[in-house]
Length: 113
Image (cartoon, rainbow, N blue to C red; front, side, top):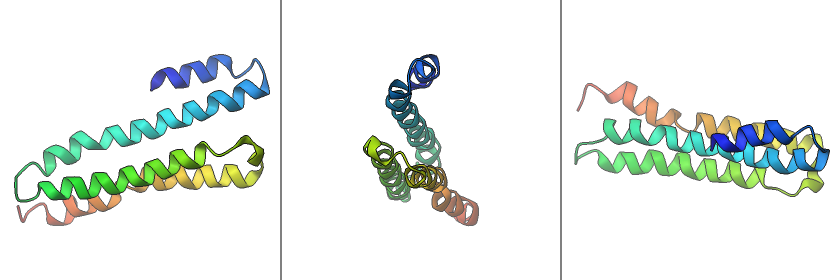
């Protein structure tokens, strides 16, 4: 995943076409890090048998949002306008904030378990 980022930054100055191509992989690598970074935390917090279904609920929701962000990033390059940039920014904000319901659950109900 980090390979996508360094490869993009290494080759971005060669041509505009290559820059747009490799930037997609850079952004997908960021989304994969968002997806993978939350799994261990939610797994161990919702480890007990009674609340393990919450792990699947929150991780599944976040992964669905992140997959949507990947779909927005992989849109055709014909949409190089500001609209695509705004959509990508919104998709990344939603992907980053998609862990909020799980964190809110942990903060509000941590004393009940």
